[in-house]
Image (cartoon, rainbow, N blue to C red):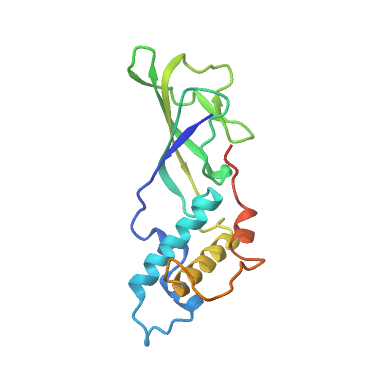
Length: 192
């Protein structure tokens, strides 16, 4: 089932809570007294975290109020972002046959073992012709965030910091065998 994941505004300090500026500078081996690249490092750190999240389809920090929009009710309503174990649906709204926005009563849904939103036991989805919007919370917390995903963000940060141009000229390069994708792939949530 096709869906659209609505972009989420990040709260102030989102990246700092995942990879602190001090940790980022230590990984880059930037001497705080010698360089004043803090703003650049923050920007690149946030871009690296975004790259990990987009590639793995997960949120590295717990995020509330995300929305996925589906064509209609069906069996394939997966949020497309995780980790799945943290997904908690908070509301479901839809456009009914009269063209009015309506909502499914709280407790009228559940998540199956595949992470799909399905009707609660003994319930069924309303008959609708319009889109369905599922509002949900998901993401890792400090307690369960995989270190491998933070390391992938460090790898990407180091790459972005070292390669500040869009094109490399006159160099031979290759991906590290146990680099960014290796660290992300173990936690990557497939989107079907």
